[in-house]
Image (cartoon, rainbow, N blue to C red; front, top):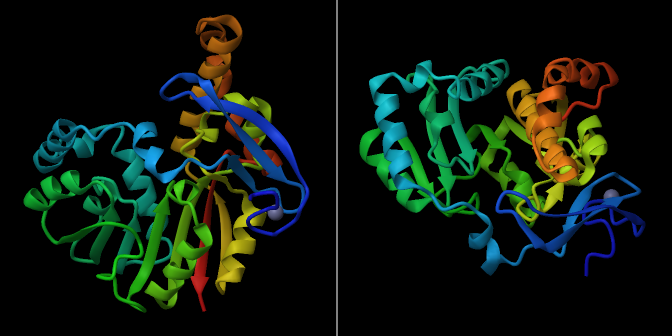
Length: 302
Ligand SMILES: [Zn+2]
């Protein structure tokens, strides 16, 4: 089926690498990552069948969700290092829009939405995690959390000032349809923010099958600025800019790529510990050559 690029329809692709599900350590099943010679999109082959999805995602620990909610309400979550992942996203968002209707697609527990000022933002999130959403709804108010996808009929067209996808688009089987729907839901002049691992990055090419963000079979697509721009243009969304974001996700990916590589080659983490000091210099190199590990694309309707 997928013998041509799903984004630019170029018939020429090369095998980028083969890899397995490292999150669950299942080397018995290999997946191919193919790379289009036209636009540079990567895709995982064969695509993960929908009925198998559940076996390749960690189960939701509702205990963890309950604990996180309590920590948020007590104000301790906001002092944790992990909370910075949310605040850096909020700071980025508010460079473009300072308030209004926001939709976060694949919101999980919705932590990003919790962090937004409810006086400025009317917050909506969609996710499959029904039970987790129920727990959150009982404790944190003024957020509309819908179980489902961006295709939920409860979402209103031409309504949203901004729609965000934080490391979600690469998991979805039909990104073009999803972006068409995003276009429909955005108000004219509305913003779209998409964060993905950058398949055209230095770390992707350096680590190959050990690249943490290759994450097969959960990542069905491996985006880069060019293929993302082609997709956005197809749905009439205009790319405003591509950003090197986020630094935290970037260093996390570098760290785990080095660990995977170290364990695969040497059977232990010693090389990782030896090379770890270099990790902090690597992002400078990535920025300098423009092939940063994480990509955030800002696009606009109209
Ligand atoms: Zn292509």
